[in-house]
Length: 262
Image (cartoon, rainbow, N blue to C red; front, top):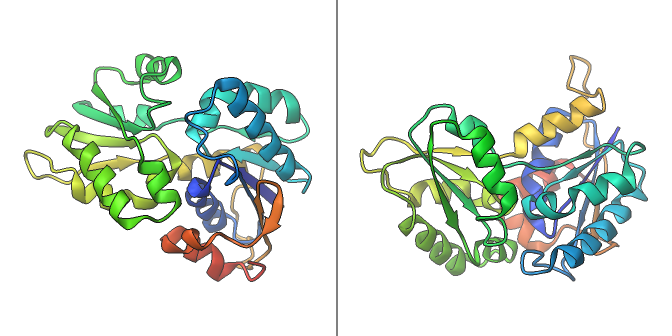
């Protein structure tokens, strides 16, 4: 089987690694848009055009499903992507994990890009799924770009700035951008709870990977082979190797290690 993932950049690594762990026998196609990123500042129409091009590059490799491993693209382009590719290729969007984060009550923060923070899409998710939880939206300007280029200084500075805007009594943080999952432990270390109890982080990678496999009836079973099948990397449509910055993160190194085609 073959699963494709798309994003503006390397934020798709977390979901790709989750798919690989669930189905080590699956081929992966990673399609991103370094020529056009960041997508966040673009108009919805422009972003949708970029997202469609990235999705079509992936679709040319005939995947069994496509994961839109990008919150911003899921907010603005998911209907257009589904209209273009379904029913031939199931398209799975990425939704911030607000519902599980809010399940325990208390105060929850949602870290997201400025384009997603305060958007009608995110506000609707909060209204529908936050329940009684007290939700604080925290915009994180520059963090996705810092992660994309593995800029250690910028990562530290942007995480620190977002942590300073996060309430001290927050119980959980929703990682509302797929790039943030690559630096999850650095975020955990930066957000200091007033009672010093461990902070709970909620990403989307595991859930979206499992959903993609459910849509293709390919959830892991006892006969899943511990193989190392192919990994195809598409950068703005060009077939290349994993970007060097991807290897700065555990998920990128994992994919490179178990995928000899890289």
